[in-house]
View 1 (cartoon, rainbow, N blue to C red):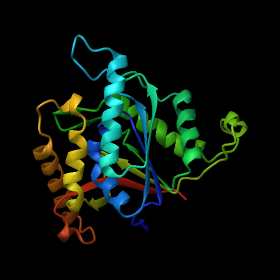
View 2 (view 1 turned 90 degrees about the vertical axis):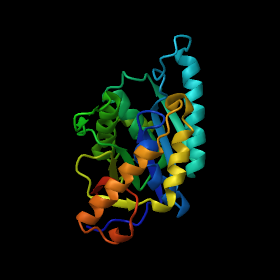
View 3 (view 1 turned 120 degrees about the vertical axis):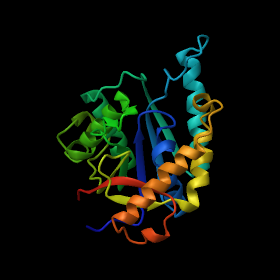
View 4 (view 1 turned 60 degrees about the vertical axis):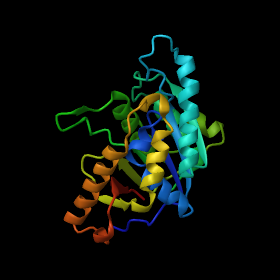
Length: 244
């Protein structure tokens, strides 16, 4: 299978502010530096992500959207949009699928990056957030077949949004990755972007954990004989689909 060096235009569909910075920001920064147009589509604005008893959802939306826009700027992302679904309540229903199809037909990307809906847990330490699963599931359904099929969501045709075939899909945070991206030169930018999410990180420094993840991913790339993996010190991984 031929895997493109980079997409011309990538739509990154993600559940919450800071999700992309954890799992794919190194790749985003690399693609952007190489000339890709990157668009972020946030399904929620993270309005539940605070234990401060004085915080309101409306205040948190403003804080987290500003943090996400700053992180995106640091990575070279050209455009950020928020659908403002309610955090922790996302379901992969037809309303969400239609909104994602609308975005795909508007932006007409040649690659979509989204979360892996099959990754329900990792090891014995992490249970996947249900919003991640729902957004991944809805995004894949939007990519195939809904964005492609003229008779699906005919109301979008009345909005002037013609069908669009997305050639490439990258699942981030994937259970079974098969594509590796060298982010060695972009790792510090990834860390800087994640640090922009101050409301979520507090005093915690994410750099050691991110570095360990990226080192382990690069080691896996070498183990699998990925091209040029011997030069990789730090990497991100994806499950890749060519659905042209």
